[in-house]
Length: 89
Image (cartoon, rainbow, N blue to C red):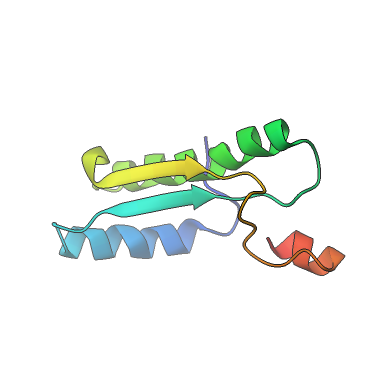
């Protein structure tokens, strides 16, 4: 799987930070909006989190320092009060 669109530079920065701080660990979370079923959103949210995990490992971070979790629509990144907010989330 691939990280979410636009997250590449953030993941490169995270890899650099983790590389400089070898005792640090990171949890990667994937989120969706509430469009669709809870089950499909949970599956969809696992893509970015797992993709981020894979990306960091490919950039030298050991897998035992990472955890990834798809949260679906349970904890949206932004309030879904407008179509623009849903698109941002």
